Every structure is written in structure tokens, then in C-alpha cells.
Image (cartoon, rainbow, N blue to C red):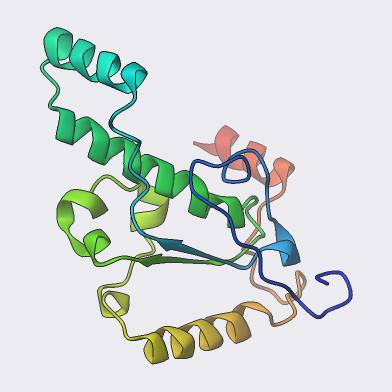
Length: 164
């Protein structure tokens, strides 16, 4: 469907087989909607042993580890949509818990640097409007010879490194 221009919708579960290891780059993935916070199954014996070890050895609280791990997993999942410096996509965290600083502060800098306060806690209609505008802007043809360089070649990077 994606190759013939019709698009498609793909659903997956965080921590499932598809959530890691498969890239949806270019037109195969333009948006990821993370619904909920992907916490681990806390009754697992292996997880219980790991949490006990972290608590006894490093004084790491169970809730701190579980929260960090869940946000790390969420970042891993939404990162499937952007796989190169010339790729683009939207990441929607559809859970009000991501508005809290203790969750947002655990997201990687490459995600938080693009979070806009005005785009937090939006209604469904506003998300659709923001998404439509973003996709229209990003889908415009990119002319590499237009005078503005946004991507650097390997040679340009080497020159910049030698000049520093």
C-alpha cells in the first residue's frame, strides 16, 4: 500500500517483536502514536530479582527503575519512524503521563529538543491539524541546490573537523 501511494496503518504492541529491530524509514512510517506507558510485567520472577539486586547493590528504587525503563522503551518504539538524517516523521505520546516532568525528563535529548510546549495536552482535533500542517511542510520537494544546505557530506564534515 505504501509503495503505490495509498498509505497504510500498522499496529504493534510496545515490547513486542515488531517494536524493536524493524525500521519504518522513509514513506513506510511517518507517524508513531504511543498509547500508554510501556511498563514491564512486574510479577515476573526475573524482574523481581533484578529489582532486588538494584535496590540492594545501588539503592535504586523500584519505581525509579520501572519508570526509566518504560520511558526508554517508549523512546525506542517511537524512534522506529526516524532512521536517518534526511528522514522525517511525527511522534505522538498519547498519554497525559508524558506531560509530567518526571517522565519527560527521562526522554532522550533528541526527542525533548523537538517538544514544543504549545503541542502538549492537545485535543484530537488539534493533533490532526498540527499533524496535517507538519506533513504538508515536510513532504515538499527538497532541492539540494537551492542555496541552503541542511545536509552535510562526509567531505564537508571532514573539512569542518580539520578547521576546528
